[in-house]
Amino acid sequence: MLAESVSQTRFVLPKDSSLGLRDQICELVSAAITSQGLSPDKRLPSCREMAQQLGVSRNTVFSAYGRLIDLGLVVARDRSGYYVNPVAQ
Image (tube, rainbow, N blue to C red; front, top):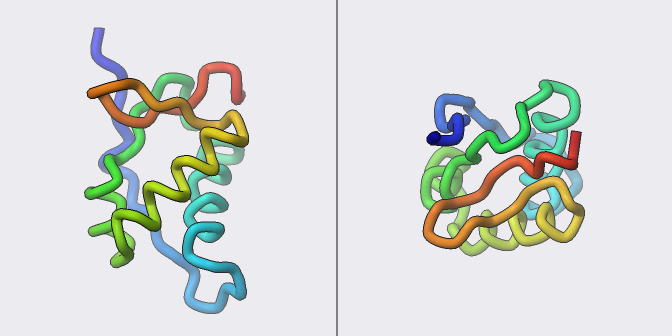
């Protein structure tokens, strides 16, 4: 069974934030998980897709996803991508 993807979700960075880009991305994704109720095991956009969407470096997105993993909101699956952690809800 394939996991549901959020590739259709548009993420937009705020223009007036005092946070760094990594932290802004972390806030965007964590808000989408908690307040918008992204379902467990929903696939997040790849680092490349998210970077293109936000106009930032892939390394910045990779760092943000790493931070979200540390926070327990996201899990990485080898050769598959990044997913909403089922226990994050």
